[in-house]
Image 1 (cartoon, rainbow, N blue to C red):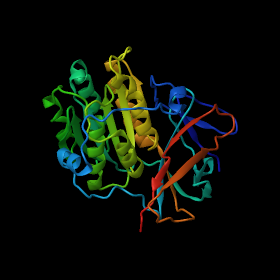
Image 2 (image 1 turned 135 degrees about the vertical axis):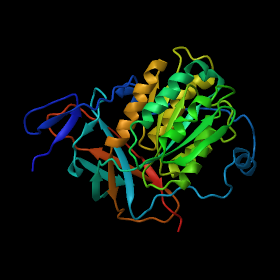
Image 3 (image 1 turned 30 degrees about the vertical axis):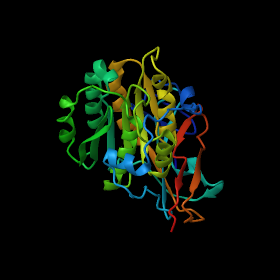
Image 4 (image 1 turned 30 degrees about the horizontal axis):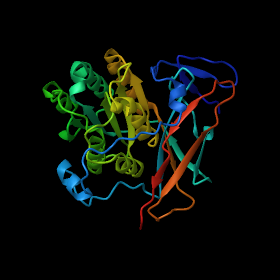
Length: 341
């Protein structure tokens, strides 16, 4: 059976016939930068609170267990792009290998259907976003236009602290109607907002879950530490995408460290961080992230060893590209925490 492979904007002939696709994932963030390891980020916590008091301060629920992967079936979201950073679709499961803790696993299924998704939007409304707010609102609206009727969304804004503006709703109008009333002020509690977003995902009705972060800087006002948030991101079965809107010449240490922080948070989940310096590009990039969520692959496998040790287990996905294609880049979830019982 011949395989039909689609690369946005390309058409090849030969052993692997390719159909033309118009899904163009053009980003300013270069492929080389995406392939690099995220830089070390050191954000000094602003307040030394114990875990219980910071949880209450953020309105989170003490004692709520973190999300764990179902060890009987592991889902791995995967995005494949070409050297021009365009989406590659039309691959099948013979083009992938998956390993858990270096043990090769049998891929049960590879899907690329537009299945319903539970999505959280985390929107920076700190003071530095003042002149970018209108473009950011438009970007969120553009992202919501890529939704299918079954999707559900929530909206969190953050400045000095995160605020749950809208809990999960299938009505994109409920989210859009709140955007005009969101005002820019205060500092940047990005880490606290991510924590609150992960907590809200406990209420998601769909197995596929994603967060979209829109921010123009690093963190300078969170109660949760960078280490704590990295831990819950690794434990949560949530794919994270981010758009970082940065000045050419960052004015503060937090702004300098912002890109590295977002890369670390997104890379671990199989998502991506996009860096732009022009607010006019926000809506376009947000649309492309929405399209990427619709056209990514999801690998499903049952682990040979089904651990119940509460520990982190590494996932490695390898791509076996059809002959005659240029080098392709793969982004995939890097691991999961097994349940403890």
